[in-house]
Amino acid sequence: MQQKKYRDKHGLFVAEGPKLIDELLQSGIKLHSCFTTDPIAEPSEKHYEISAPDLRKISGLKTPNTALALFKIPEPQELKIKGLSLALDAVRDPGNLGTIIRLCDWFGVSQLLCSTDTADCFNPKVVQATMGSIARVNIRYLDLEDLLSQTELPVYGAVMNGTNVYSAPLEQEAILVMGNEANGISEGVLKAVTQSVTIPRFGGNDTESLNVATATAILLSEFRRSTEM
Image 1: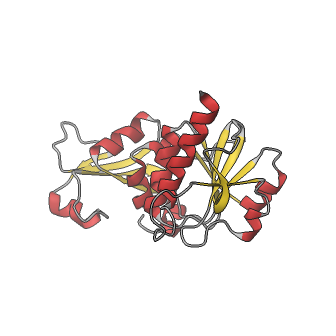
Image 2 (image 1 turned 45 degrees about the vertical axis):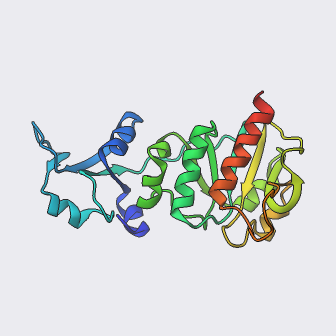
């Protein structure tokens, strides 16, 4: 399940660690099987007690936890563009994607729209980084350029040379687009952006840009501060 083709084939994804596994169970994600080094009072067809060496063999972590579980990939929820939505244009790093999913959960952004070349949200590294938030955010992979060109909502794009986000008028009902770690928002998606926004730099001029997950946190915070207060 470390590879997407096998996750797609079997409809399963991996989660490691008792806390994350418990978060997913409480959120209603269906368990396929769980393997743990902790004693099990009553082993079942879904719960298996294994040795620490065996857990190390199946774990994707450098330092394995005490449990690993396989969960069924849930069916995507209906696409409903309302309130504040976040869109990712070719965000490739699993750690960034996982952090962004967690940020969506924290800031009450229930809809995450991903271009088809964005990292797979069920990649084990993404799942671990979400800390369970993957169960509470509706993540959809789609033709981002097509969707944004058809929406009637304002589309904000995070760029290096836009309007200062701290002075820009921000709408409650909107889509915020974050671009690729190295190249930013693609040309096709940028055409659908109706308002470019920038996080101003206050420090020295040697820093080229912010990490995409860090930038997402700042922008979501500012959207919520401006529209909810």
